[in-house]
Length: 376
Image (cartoon, rainbow, N blue to C red; front, top):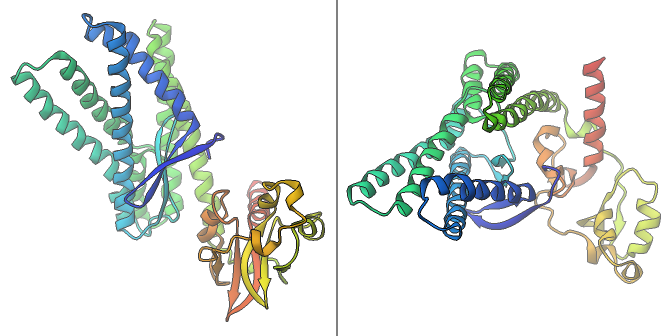
């Protein structure tokens, strides 16, 4: 997703939580900054070893609050009938990945506000804890981390509520524009432009700050560039998705479907079915019934000497619950199933008969043709 590998570290409320490799870098940078700058100033009487341990604990707590923020989004979305495929922590925070878009502006508003709302709640709890700790004159080693987490959660809420897509505040803005105009594409365009303007403003603040000697503000330039880039990309994605919502799978499916008998060896599969073929996935049949889906990558992952002994039936993915669809389903509705982490293909079944197959390659060709048409 982000160009780097992600690792699943657990499931909470039935939703997988992933950590992208880029997250480890930002975890280190935050902990390093806390242990070498913030904590030595706040707790000068403590040793550097103590600073390191407290910094690691504070960084872990900070990212735990980001996870809670993202789960607030996800649980509200799921309550609204949307399916959440996973939550991923990466260099710039976290993201909840939905398999569907909100069906209306009301759900989008609630879902978008849930994350910052949870961050505000965490900040409020922190302010209460700060008051208690001060009243009992608790050790600064307790007060300083609580104070930091309180204000960092407040900052996360305020930043995310900025009205620029794809920030949460931008999604709130989009939901309002969507409700007013009735057009999600137009709402996305306006909200994305606000996101780009906010990004440019952050870059401008960083430039002015650096010229005045405030090197810490260089992070504003990084965030501004990231936000403006995401905003532009988000609108293009919505534009493509709107076009794809008009295209039924039946119009791009490959038919008749190349079927692989279950007894076919992987050696024969590689040479007779995949070599020079249009698709890298094929349905596997046994006694006239589709029993699974086999992909070229699954064969490549096996040792070359196993190809002559293993069959397509033994190697195929037999879970077809996310693969079978009807011809009237539109392309935008199956995009998540065509991601690298999904099955990568869908089988078009009509009246119990296999009519065709649509793979990631088919959709890529469609998107390329749409993009060429848009630019011409």
